[in-house]
Image 1 (spheres, rainbow, N blue to C red):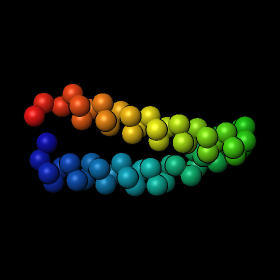
Image 2: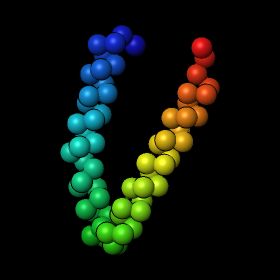
Image 3: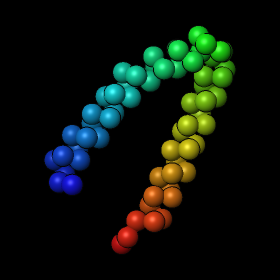
Image 4: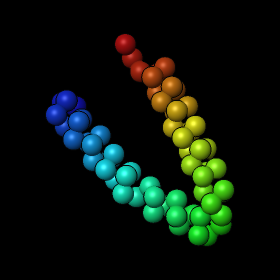
Length: 61
């Protein structure tokens, strides 16, 4: 993927996260509790970190 398209894709995903993240946290907090919403957020962040490490280990050099 060319660098110009990759930058545009990452920027689009970043903006989508900024817009959808707080709404999703609020929805989960309204359905259950704020502690559960933030606990789930922490779990998802750990999952993302683990998958990034796994993806970097399997990427060809």
